[in-house]
Amino acid sequence: MYFSVDTSTPSIMTASGRLGAGLLNDVRGFRRPGALESAAGTGLAMCLMHMQGEPDTMQHDPSYDDVITDLDVFFDAQLDRLQAAGYREIASLSTPGSDSEKQPSRISKCWPDSANWPPNGFPYWSGCLVNL
Image (cartoon, rainbow, N blue to C red; front, side, top):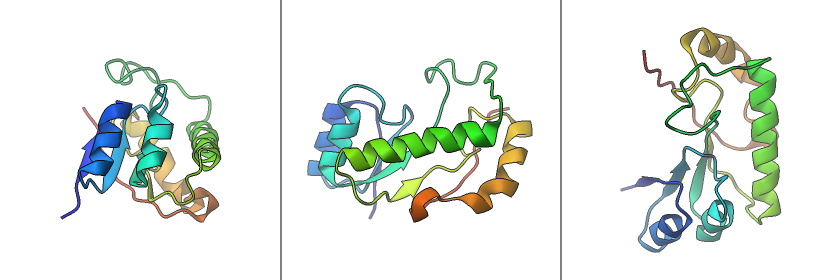
């Protein structure tokens, strides 16, 4: 069985690797101090997610100049950070529009352009969760 651990806490990421988890999913995109290094050190698959703000505010009027370009820039930077930390294989990417921060009108703009994904040829998964 394959377990995903949803956390932004580096010590929980490390413990998850020792306890046999299969995937780390961090809503903050491994941007907390020490999170990226802890996650990369486990060797586990990682789900890269995007959000604006913090989890408790990310759905309060998110704003994008160009949602596709903004997300491409974000994910390219995250992939560069992971590779710099020594991570050579990214198991999954959360594609544009796959988290609840994106409003329905923005999600519809993301899906047609998803043919441009994944960047750098990494495997990815895609989904859509919208809180209405």
